[in-house]
Image (cartoon, rainbow, N blue to C red; front, side, top):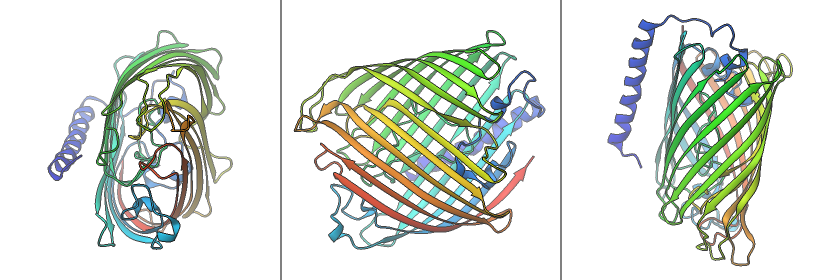
Amino acid sequence: MLNRLQTQLLIIGMLGTLLFFETTFAQSEKPGPAPGNAPAAKVDDRRLPSATALGDIFFRSQNSLIFSVGVQESATDNLYFSPGGSLGGLPASDRNGYIPFTTLTGRMAYQRQLQRTTFGLDYGVSGILFKSRDSDDFVTHNGGVDLSYRFTPRATFSIGNRISVSPAPGRFYRHDLALAPVSQQILPNSTLFIGLNRTSSNVAFASFSYEASRRSRVTFGANGAITRFQQRSLNDMNTSGGHLEYSYQAAERTSLSFGYHFTYYDFSSSGIARNHLAYVGITQQLTPSVSAFAQVGPNYIVGHSLNFLGGLGRRPGVRASVNGGLTFGEAISLGRRTFFSINAGQSISDGSGLASITQTQSAGVSLGRQLTRTLTGAIHAGYSRNQFLLSVDSEGQPTTTNGVLSGLNLSWNATERFNLFTNYVYFKQLSNGFSTLIPGRADGNTFTVGLNYSFPVFF
């Protein structure tokens, strides 16, 4: 958990890092295009694959510095935001209608591409102010930093970090960062809705890739994460891991990959677990900006048999892994003004503090359309299922959760700097075997209206 002094030091450190890299790399390099033999997808792979980013000023240029401030007013009947409703939940008859709250936000996004170096920094801080006297206010932090440096035309080294301090249940990490997407094998599980509590998480990762030939590439890396929960009944987590991958371009638009990923989980009250994943994958470039991929392979899971959820423990052993989706570049469209993204996959992940590791299956889709030159609309929906592999409930059934999340967003760019928006979010989660940790049935609706003012600099 970050106190006020740590928060100030974090912000100062990020600003110092920005200035250091700006002065260092600007003096040593001149902006220039990517190497001529690099495909277009490698240039645009830092773009967000989400239709909800349509019209966002943060995504207009890969060389930009943007400050923004905003305010939004929300109302929710989400029991997780309800006082006393974070443990076990409140029945619908006991809810006091919609709970209003105000959110004040500030954000800084910086992107810079030089001849050998790509640097990105995105940091946002928000204050959530509840109007109910018996509700606590929260300060949230969300963002990250990426640095990629090409030593030679064939060798590239990359490091990155993501942070999140949030009271919100599930979806800890923002999906609209002006940074490269991070593999779900690295990030903490964000598909579970847990009770309202302050959750702090930090993820660091590094990788090195080498082009052995014009058609083949070898990549290896390491990662680590720390997650802490304010609610004492939840499991604090430390995770670490590594990966190795060999990819081969079999045809002009088709590439094959063979890889291995290892993750080590250390839970505060439920012991340790390890996961080994070997996979084979195929990627098909559909357009210069869109590619489809699929990965299959076995997961081998080793962990202590657990029964703290009230049932018997189990040892999962080997399980099949299937992953797939579409990867989007800078400008993805079904027409001149319609944008689309989709993803689906299965992975081994942590239990978001509820228990040990899970088999997580998830799918999501977003669709956006630029209605006019200044008005943009988007809808999104997602489904997730988590099966806790080391435990069963008191009746011997697998401990599981099933959740859906959907919403819509309408954004109006009054000027290049001034933006008004409104959105609606609905979620529902069904679970079994958790006693009082989370309710067996949870749902909520949240309505929001707000405005942002940005100070952009493009270069």
